[in-house]
Amino acid sequence: MKQLYITLVAVLCCAMSMTTLTSCTSDNDDNLAEQIEVTPDDKTEYTVRDLPVIRDGKADGIIAIRYYKDLPSVPYVSVSDFQRLVLPGSTVTVTMTGTGTYQLVNPGSTATVNTVDETFVVADYMSFTNLMGLMQQGMDNAYLDGLPCVRYSHQTLAGGSSSVSFNYSKYGINLRGDETNVYFPFATLADLYADLHYHNAACNGENVCVASVDDSSNGIGSFAPEYQVEKLKEKGTRAEDMIAYAYGELCFTIDHFYGMPGRSPYEASIRQIGFDKTLEASDDGKLIKQLLLSADMKQYTFGIEMLMLYLDDGGHTKTWPDNETILLDQNFSMSQDYLELIRRYFKEYFSDRMGSSVRYNLLKDSRTKVYGDNLTYHKKGNTAICHFDGFGKINFEAWRHFYNGTGPLPTLENTQNDNLVVFLDALKKASEDPEVKNLVIDLTLNRGGSLDVVAAMTSLMYGESLCYCENTLTGQHVTWYYDVDRNFDGKFDEKDKDVHYDLNFCVLTSDFSFSCGNLFPSLCKDTGVLVAGQTSGGGACAVGMFRTAEGFLYQLSSCRGRLTDNKWENIDAGIVPHVTLNTGSELTGEWSGITYTQYGLEPFYDIDNLSQIMSSYYPQR
Image 1 (cartoon, rainbow, N blue to C red):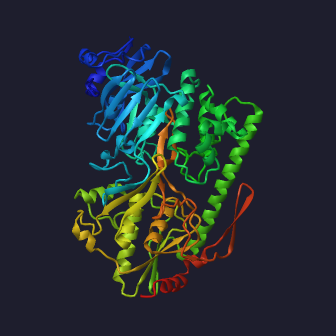
Image 2: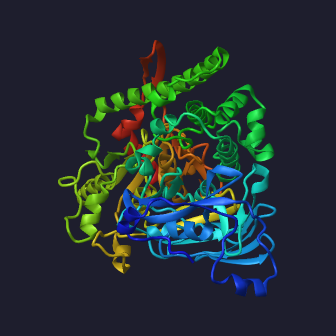
Image 3: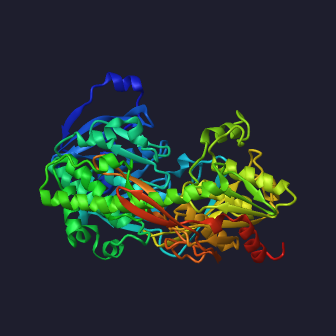
């Protein structure tokens, strides 16, 4: 097997090579031929380019990329090289078992590829594509952000089937093979492996970039500017073979990896007839398809933006970065009728989005009138309250220093803007105050964030840390379990079980409580913790990060984790509270000449009222 990585010195000394071949040979060909009397199914001529690898912004050797004569713009990569690329140190063993058929074995599972029928059948899809060993040794293909006080424990699976079969021929995607290996289009393998931690890879014909750390801040684009949307738009004309392949790959990805959270109006159609025919069924869809098949890169990238609006499911499916300047750029040639339709589409979308933003800020201002700018801890009588407008504020550097023994335990005094620090401070103050019996967790303006923070907080509240979800691709019901260093002594051990806070908890929700702001009350309600307020705002799927064949970054509600309650019911409709609270005064705000109304949440922030509700719910206290 060819060595994938060489030293940087060697890379700099070698010119990028391009060699025309008709077949590929190796030292083992004669022995293999004696065992199996077959010939390669695909003798299409190809060229090989040795492209530099950039991993998290640093040079990391080279990788061989193929370009076939019939698809001169579409980069192909061997499954063996790709496996070593995305999970260094691991391998795929490829065995030719017949004409165009191959068995693949990697550290997680086995698979069968047929390059005649263009099929890929994997015994355990999630295990075969598992990159979470980059996060924690031996970890299943689950979800973990990397907060050091949270550790993945195990998962349980029920129902469905771990086996998955993909038929690429329906999408015009060609798989290739020779005597020693199997070759996929690079983006096809990248989409197969894209996980919930945003590990992903991309190839643009000039280099191969890998994000092995969290890609939520535009990972590859942050260290390789050529993958940013504005740079992509400068490329001008798209090649004909790339246009067809990129569209087929996008259709395949949405048909298989979109998690169908429940709120997109096109989900039922995509399930029944597929994404391509769904687009063809409406005028808006036809427009988007035209853009996606455009030879003009600006039209194409705009089509991707339009597609995300078309699939809009509350914020989990969108382009990245979410930049209105990019979205509203119409600097390309198109008929006036189509431009008007685009403008109308964006006007509706941004009117809804900005209206929501205006209403959100109205609530924020009304809460400030009650609590001021201090959102960490407030107490009145036997009840205290702390506020979380998201679960995404984590000072990873401070936490890593503490767990590496190079820094103090993060506190409000030494670590700012950290959700877990705020919660630990509130727990400490409430538990040390003999008067306080109740702690309210305000999620009324919580738009989501990290599952790690949710795992840590729920563990500290009621001694259990887990998450229920379903894999909509495999049909499996999945429960992820986590360990939490509950005493924050830097170790996971039996002493963590001794930590207990003798407090009654209440979770406060509104229709703005979305994503993890929706998951948190679901987990708490399953366990019997009081939920009060309004039905939360939903947001059922974990997020997967993908790149188009040309490197454009977008995210989808992922099939790998559609969140449920403990009865396996989808929670996208929101969590109905135990106690519904009435809204307060009418508030109005304006954007672009449009007036928006929002009813205040004064009763939600009335600590005396919350104290009475909690006393009724927890009568033993």
